[in-house]
Length: 389
Image (cartoon, rainbow, N blue to C red; front, side, top):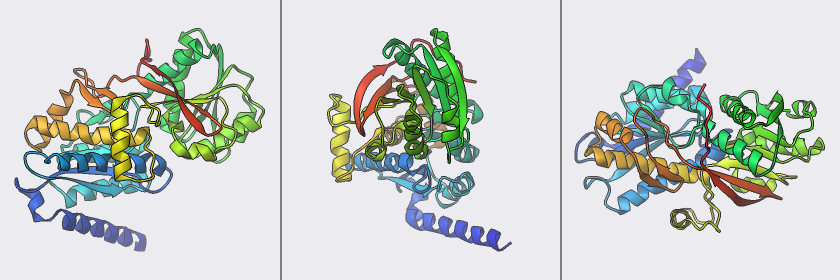
């Protein structure tokens, strides 16, 4: 009972804080255009969500510097989900209680976390645009209102499989994945399907305990390639565990391995590769990346942007563009405008939604890591993509 009372008090404090932040003008046509953001600024997902939230805030700052929307300023009201689904659901609810005029909500980078927030947002008749989650099942799990700013896991897994088979010459693979993660389970399955369809052999599929990957690693057979489906906070344990076990084969993973500058502290990172949303390195020749890096450096001195920072930036800009196209923050008009988006130029690629789809078709970047240093390897749009299941 005492715990329930304490949680209720915390929720009320959150609601009052949001209301104070917005003020009475937020509900009127002359007040700011308000969007919501749900990110895990603390807990195990912070390495993904802090950069993403920074990118989103930068997009709002740039929009206001250009005059806002309809002559009104743009405000982003943000809550911290603490990497706890129950907290995410509660604070998403509080977000609407404190800011009932929200035009839409962005945020989060993991499937399980999104499924705690998006149904709440859909229940309010608003779009939820996830900046970084990649499960292709999400739109059917939250019909009509959930959109992805990123490619689906079946796309990045297929791109990784095709690159490993054709560029690395891998003909056999052992798969290691985080047993506690929906993202990891789906990702490794899509990789195995596409790799086998190419003619490769999947010799073993092993789930590991995030706290102790060594037991699963020890059971892996020799293979040309290790496919590692891991969450960001598991990378620093899983990769060294593979190398300490004497496995010298290349390691390939998904965007869960995109941990940015944290790679510098991970030992034994030779021949590691991962699929992700864009290469944000200082040697990128992409004009959109160059501009984004300059803007990010101005806003966050001394910080290096990563792909998740760019995804947050793209997600916020995409939602603001939909509001502008709709001609107002009216939620249903915003949803229709977002669904009709076709050729939005983002830092992470061109974003558009085919009729009936809420997942964009985008190319996949492959990044290599050696001794903590990252380098661009390839950009791939896979030829064949496993069906979401």
